[in-house]
Image (tube, rainbow, N blue to C red):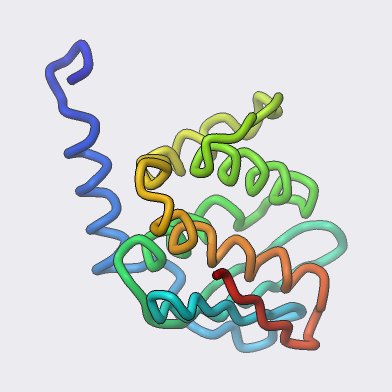
Length: 159
């Protein structure tokens, strides 16, 4: 519990369940500039990430797919924090998120991204369950693949 008596694990679980049941930005973009598909064969999670990038800015981002509450919540939260970011900011967020869910060294992050990093915090509890880390990072790996491939529709697998 924190100083105000709120159990953060319970709050984080509620956030994950809410995003899992009511994902934000769950749709195909009509005119994406980049897209990639991700698949976790261990649990069956599948995600397609759509990006609309203008210059170096992500003007819109969405996803479609099916999977567990963690992968759906991760994709939903990811789309919320990436919209409007530059590609460099988005990659910095991915690096921070990945380090936090894998127990790695997060390194320095720009102060301007701290609110977004905090919004992703509910998912960091998966580091205690290594098999679930792949669920939480799948949408992010698909996002990275989309940036690299454009409309070539890359597919990434996490195993």
